[in-house]
Amino acid sequence: MQDINNSLYELDYYRQRQFKAGWQDLVEVVFSGILASADDADSRDFLRLMGANLAKKLPLPDAETVGDLEDSLNRMLRHFDWGSVRIDATQEQLLLTHYAYPRSADIESEPIWVLSFATVLEGAYEAWLLAQGGEPHVSLRWCGPAQENTLIFSYRNEQLR
Image (cartoon, rainbow, N blue to C red; front, top):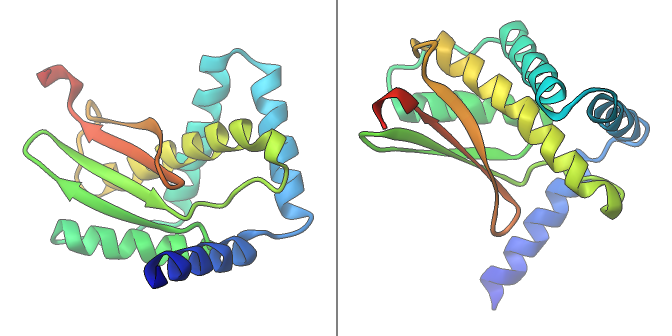
């Protein structure tokens, strides 16, 4: 029982740190405006581009190992109070599990917020991986929300499927 209480306490702590009054509202309005003003593909492409531009503005140091990459990503995410990521590597893919991401202040806006935030992260993660020596034809895609408020991303070469 103690582990559950500690996890809930940690999650509540991160949510309090992540919420920035005014900025969070502005970003939610921008996200919903982008999604409402263009079709799904165009709006998501734009949000991915914004994530990629953020990653280019804030590059990671070169990583020698997947562990080094994970550490660098987590330092960047801590800088933004955007949670943390775990990378699991297999022969076929890198699986990035993003924990404790910022949440919407308005429960009714949560689906749009998650879609938008995950799409921005798609662009950022893909650009950071490309800068680490990834190949342009290998894509990173959000696999949807998973249990316990995580976002799952897959980085794999779809041409090999």
